[in-house]
Amino acid sequence: MSIVPALDVVELKKTYANGVEALKGVSLSVQPGDFFALLGPNGAGKSTLIGILSSLVNASEGDARIFGVSIRTQRSAAMRLIGLVPQELNFNMFEKPFDICVNSAGFYGIPRPIAAERAEKYLKQLVLWDKAFQPARAMSGGMKRRLMIARAMMSEPKLLILDEPTAGVDIEIRRSMWKFISGINAAGTTVILTTHYLEEAEQLCRNIAIIDKGRIIENTTMKLLLSKLDVETFVLDLARPAETLPVIADVKLTRVDDVTLEAEMSREHDLNSLFANLSAQGITVRSMRNKANRLEELFVRLVETGSTRSDKEAA
Amino acid sequence: MSTNANLIALGTITRREVVRILRIWMQTLLPSAITMTLYFVIFGRMVGSRIADIVPGIGYIDYIVPGLIMMAVITNSYGNISSSFFGAKFGRHVEEMLASPMPSWVILTGYVSGAVLRGLLVAAIVLIISLFFTRIHLYHPWITLSTILLTAIVFSLAGFANAVYAKKFDDIALVPTFVLAPLTYLGGVFYSVNQLGSPWREISHANPILYMVSAFRYGLLGISDIPMGVAYAVMIGFALVLGALGMFLLERGIGLRS
Image 1 (cartoon, each protein chain N blue to C red):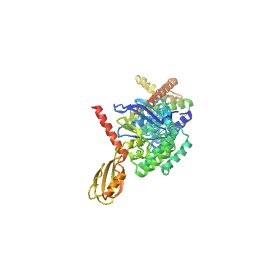
Image 2: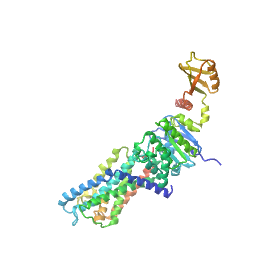
Image 3: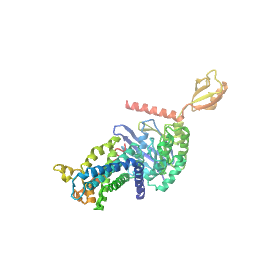
Image 4: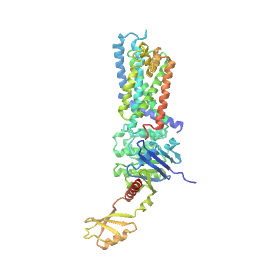
């Protein structure tokens, strides 16, 4: 028996009234329980796609099914399955977080006593309970973002869509949000995440799609995608200044300053031989880090390739 | 959604609207109380006592009370929904309703219920104030109640359409200033259209507010410029047309969905 996908997008197209073609036939499948990253540069079509899935944008062509339920022909049933954390703050700033959550549950037909219990549960889990009865406009940016997650959880959706949930949030709060979302996913909720923090996607997501100029240009597992990265650059912090720039076969070394080197090497080349060679030349490495996030490097490369291809097609 | 879930959703929107009305009562309830008190003092006591009775046996202040109550109902039901729904659009929190499983009729009915409740609340306040100036007789309770309800529904639905089409706050202020106010003043609140000569009397019959004010006056005083059957046909007709328009706008997402 085949498993019904949590999300099945089929040839979705969107052309806005001003003629902008935001989606040019997007097809995508997300399996139940997945933690899925949807990445793309600004204006790639991510928010349009999410807008269509959450029925805030009308599709021009195509369809999407949430656990087999069509958003076009069974909108109400499909929306019952989705929780949305949009990019822009979209709650009433004059209302209190508790009321925002309880009212949101009411829109899903959840009785008030159950809604009140859930509001307390999720506001406490997201460390917002002490602000629950103050006007939402008095909260900090990070708190407002967490409130949107709490609100989205009120209907306990099977599919949670997070559109840049951690934008503008400090690292401490971001990590607490990752922990919360990972917990939700571990409990069985399928999560789709869009973010510009690529280390966030790399750390959290198992599968990934990259969208650019309204088309999916990559759709694979995170592991497989990262394995495509053939060259990595490491930054090496040295214990003492290196008098001469060492020479090592198959490794391109460059001096950043007296005590910092950059080593660009193929993924085939192992780190043990790099360190052995450096030791042999009297260089001690105190610490090491990736110059750029691995996913970030791939992302930039894929989007650049996509742009070149589009330009050629246009020409 | 099931019927029970729809009722919970409907109750949620209505409750939220009522909480909003009561929270900002200085903007929603007080202005009409002050304006109508001034109308009663100036047109009822100071000027009204020198105006000849429009209908023999009914004082001028008694004659204008139904019209003033209707004026308050029209302004408040229209203003409530246009400002609340446009505010939700402007603040983007309308999205939480549009992205929910609620059917369009629940959203429309919820907002209309809130606006109608404000209309009725303000009507009750104006009625209580009028008791300080005159004695109210209730000739036809059901006609009084049904007329006030239908009027509040019609203008709530009109206010909803205005809010959907509005792109800026100016757009929701234009209709009350340039359409509603003239129609209300020329709708027989302060005079009987039968006093007008031709063609103004005939032209006045194109004003839907005339039918509402006349029917309400009939409920309170037992006198009307318009036959009741015609008045109900106009009110129900407008309610159905504007209700269909509201549903069409929500279903198609005009002004709401990209």
